[in-house]
Amino acid sequence: MWKRIGKYSLPIIICLVLLLTLVPGCGGGGTEKTEIVIGASRDLTGPMAGFQDFGFAAIYNMWAAEVNAAGGIKVGGKYLPVRIIEYDDGSDTATVARNIEKLCTQDNVDFLFGPTGTTPLFAAAPIANKYKKIIICGEGGATTLESKLVDLPYVFSVLNYSNHFQMPVFAEIMEAAGAKTAYIAYIENLHGAEYNLTAQTEFTLHNIEVVGTSSYPVTIADMEPIIKDAMASNADIFCMFGYPPNNILFMGTAIALNYSPKALIIGPGANFEFFSGIFGPNLEDVFGEGAWNRQTSPAANELADKIIAAKGLENLDWWGALVYYSSLQFFQQAIEKAGTLDSTKIRDVMSTSKFETALGLMWWDCAAGGKGGGLLPQACYAGQIGQWQNGIFQIVDPGDKRTANPVYPKPPYPTP
Image (cartoon, rainbow, N blue to C red; front, top):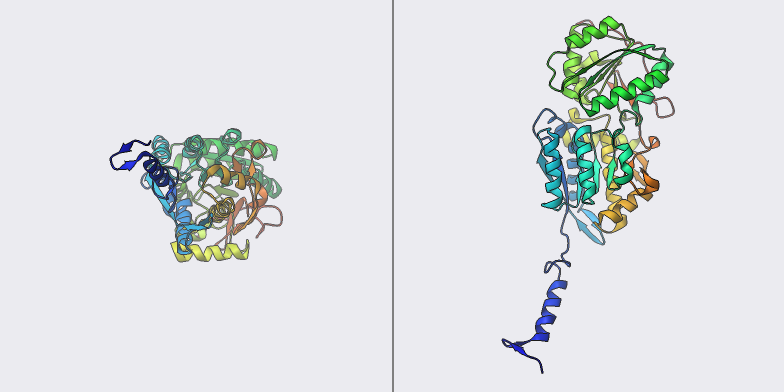
């Protein structure tokens, strides 16, 4: 005989409890997702804050708005909207780490977008991986991270960078052009150190002698001593490996001092349309890291129009925008193919699939035979090195992706 508890019998109560745990929105295990939440630690303030308007964030916010306008991402037969949570890190790496930890443990986001810069990316990647959150990394190189990708299966680094495959291509271009000597200026952080080391290695392999180097802090306010040292070296090539504020300062000072070497390559900054807007004809035949342009493909041309409509002409990024947007198209297709928001199942799809994107057919080279983190193969990129020619950031890589022949030596700056 059943005992009575109040006016209900024990079996009825047991049935009610079981039923409540199975009803969506009640209990723990049966809760249905109503949205896809993606977290990001970004420099909304600080010395790198400009990237929020011109870099990866400009593209992922545009993509999210586009996805939501179309009804969301299809997950197992249901369309879910995307919501992005952004925390300010003030361009501070320690704050990046705290933000990523909070997004994973308190906000319990589904996925992550990477922070700005090589050093913050290096800090964020292992935390995301610890919590099994796929992180799509935008701005930032992974030279130092590459050897660790075997143990970071949830990390997917999108951008091309120093040894992947920019400096090898640039050194090849310069050797073919007849350059013999180079001077390198680099920022005192992981980004600068990686580019300096890779450039020195590649120049040596291509019979180009590095005749001088200078490092500088991110807060540098006077480029004149570095430029005068480079002028005294009479190097054929000057490499400016820094961030946009440093590169703007350098370019303005170089023009004022009439420093116009035979080849000038400028890191993040020169690839943006706003750089052309600032320096105009003075930027003619200056090299930058990237690259893509409207000639890359009809899809690339369409994307340029889309960015202008959403963000304005000055927001065009001729290095990262195409690959950022394409990686998000790929990610969306991987989620839909997996039919779940389970990061492990989605990353397995990402490591084994090829999808059509604005970049063309896209896939990942994943470490540990597909079990580790991913980098894009060289074949997926539109270009590695760009050069401003008549207001267009032309791809000057050797091979069939080239949209213009490289100009060497660079002509003097126009007469004011």
